Image (tube, rainbow, N blue to C red; front, side, top):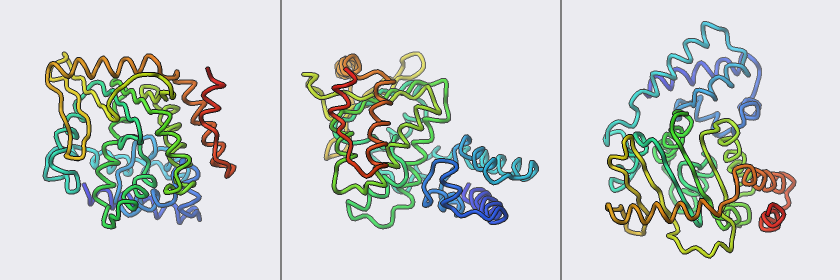
Length: 292
């Protein structure tokens, strides 16, 4: 897989130089920041099929070379996360979750104070790892990006992410997050819902009166066999049993019932994007009040 990615990256770099474009130019065309394009060209990150098509169009790649690029990219996607041996950075206690993500027909997620790992863009991942003093993070970033790409690869599946208003405020106002990184993350969230209608991202406003865990993820499988939920703790994950699964599902459904609609949530994210892009921190709570 690594050799295929490196060959694909080399072809992309050659096509970019032939067109006389910089990595920043190419990134702007496909809505990615320059560091992500650099990782593509170095063969350090897999490329979602829809992004590859955007690169091919931007670089005006010849049909024969484009076909080679698609073939290399398809080969690199095959069974990438099939075994524990391929997960170098993912903790062993989290590998069952990664395996479940690959097979689940529906993923229902709630995060009360943070952006779910599957929804993070690369620049935001790097910022979070850096904040924890981690330096050698190539494997960790690649494996988290792989998890995120699952969302765009299976339109027949259902993905519904609920974010608290608090998580959104922390993103756009936290002094520890570079405003440009926050803007990239907001654009990423918007892009996921605009390009992939089967991915739901909705905001749960303050004042719901509901008491639920800060993090909750529910996996459903074909035939409802093996459904389970889990929450992250300081000691790893706490996985549900048959009884607690129904409690977790009811809690998620209660949150879903008070969340903003998909369009209201997109409007809110767009407001945050505009505020960051104009260097003014957006008043997210005020926007929610106007949406009600």
